[in-house]
Image 1 (cartoon, rainbow, N blue to C red):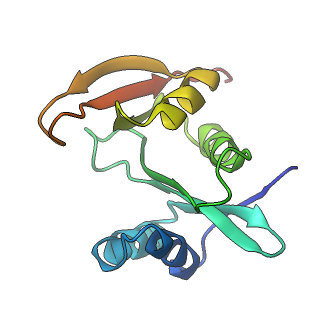
Image 2 (image 1 turned 90 degrees about the vertical axis):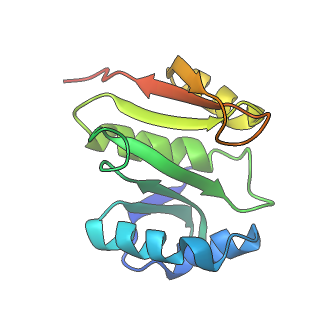
Image 3 (image 1 turned 90 degrees about the horizontal axis):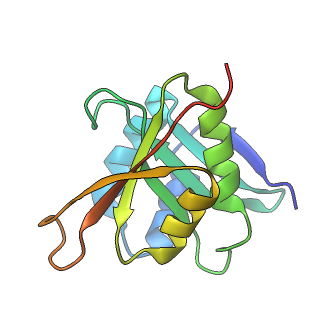
Length: 141
């Protein structure tokens, strides 16, 4: 199924998806700021969005960075995350960076399938679960 992907006009749908994962209030301001910058993307169908991607180019050495990629429970492994990454990959002109915990096998598989290369890890952010960093080089002009 081809998912609909669009920039968010307000943070409400992403906040709702995030609340399903018990994140709630701590990230509401971050999602609202991403919306204001034009860096919050939603993916779903006519019934509504089921996933979001938050880009933040200021948080990682001024490089294009996917800071959050969240898919609602019950909609995982259906191509929503891949559709969001595809949309953002066409928008940036420099290599795109992201990170995930070593324990997140699904995200690591998604990134490998989309051509991201492992760039290293940082230990100590989450005890016992290093943060792995990935980069996708531009493949088109």
